[in-house]
Length: 396
Image (cartoon, rainbow, N blue to C red; front, side, top):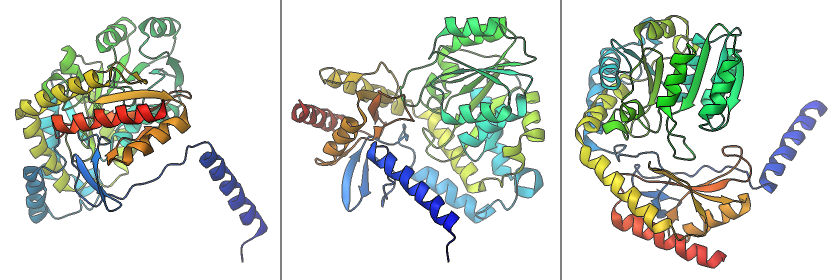
């Protein structure tokens, strides 16, 4: 029989959930019955999807699936243990070497695999920063950078989005032992690119580390090498994190940095030490994906083409199209209820564009996050643009 205290606790949770629902902030999982691609089977319907981070269309590539299957036959399914016990297999070691050489944030860089970008960022900040240090964070950083900073117990100074002047002023007053500038490279909800050359210059000037989360740039920018290559940056001060479940189409993440940084993570990062290694098959699949990323410039060229096509077609919409040259194309609606209603209206003609609401984005900036992929055709983008204009007319 439930105690009075438990009943009260459940009632409190139910009240909080009802408040979220009333504010239009309830999140709902969609059950997908098909492989990832431009068209998804959801709820018995086929929807043209602009919701995935599969920017190069590799998530269902046959050669990557074949690499995973072959690895399962050779290495089994599970890794069985953490990397530091017996879970670190030859496929893990091979792909770490390949990723380090490919991204090359500095001479002699090493790389380290993680099960997710979230774990990777927690590892970086909790292993390298402590209560005697200072972290300078862009206000629009991803939640995992924010959480890693909080867990590090360092002093946190948040600066206005991409505001180099504000960051400079904050750094000038710092007296801490170590300083860390942490930033998304491509901001996940805005699609804009951080001013990395200026941030690296400040890191040099103030003897700071520069932690770069390139979850949405790796595979897309810099000929596939990511945002560092996009700007032509290399430095021993850079700690680079890239994810492997977006443009690479698989799962997991990696950190690439100076060998001393990587060895520090191996020896002290709790999210690395105390986590079972990801399946060897994922490492093998990532290896196959990396071959495509290196070789398939046509995917990036086509992606750039559909991005330009969408931006041209969206100019006359009544909503604000945020400035972005990346696959992330936000249409700022503002009001939460309106953003959800517009997203729902697009489902009628079979088009899926998610509404993004607070706290993922700041209050008053609810939006449609249009995510484009090399697997979208020009005809797909035409359908999206036409549907957006039709919905805009109905909401006028």
